[in-house]
Length: 409
Image: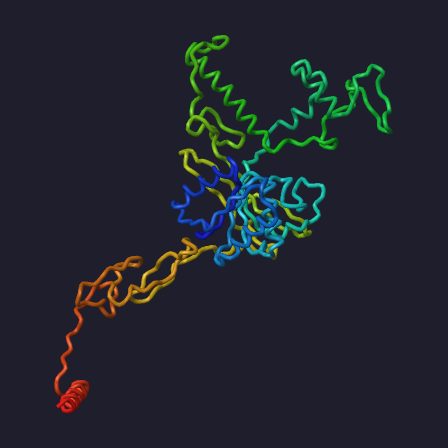
């Protein structure tokens, strides 16, 4: 979408980072992307000097404007802090994996939608304009009404509910009833005034719908097994079992739920953009999503009008990050630079080699030279030149020979 072809990547020395980097490199060729000087970092062993060295090395690649971070939260924070120390953080577009851009994390003290301390911390400028992915969020319809309507008598269905209720309300099971402890009123857990409400801290978890999908997957699988093996109306599970259908039900937003290769759930991600708001705070903003369509193909939806890099609120032009091939002249080919295989430079084929195509030279046969005017036309015979007695060079040579002969005699 952005035509970025020259990108740097930083990943952690962990199963998460290694697997992520391997996946990126396996897909790079398909999208014509070259990863310049990949850096493997260790959150346990790296010092500030090590992180600074990584950033300086990336900064030396003058055409790199995009850095992919496939790292856990703590390592990502250290990379951003190093970019701030070196003074090049605002130069890059940072692309984050699904490990770190949650709503409560946006760099060191930078705030987020759920942060109490949105103090515009020192790394917000470094991170501004960043793009990242996050598991797709969709509120579970009807759950808020159900959960806020629960009372203590729900423990008849869930024996662990009383423990949750007591921890949530800070109530007591003491039969002495309501009392005051440490200056705070403590209610009996059966007090009818105790309710689960937004004003006392209730908020639906962002990824609750994934739990719903998992439960539905098991429920549909069990129902299909019983119907297939034992027939409808049977009670209990039969011995024969099989995995669930590929697409047994729809998720909360209407997309078909099915297992990929019979193992993993479908990939569903929100695309996030780290932006500065009008009041000076910073937030992750959803600008698109990545899902699978009905045919199982990848589908990326991106709202370009909501994308912002840096600066004015309506500024959403991201920088170019590519190392384009130069336009080389006659009898010159493009070759990869030794110090950076992602980039190209021009190289002459020489006096006795001709240009086959944009990347190859070939030797001319003896007695021939590259054709003039059309470098890819091959080689032409070297023109024959004869020296006669009227040629100045011949006159000079003969004069020297005669003088030498007379001197000897």
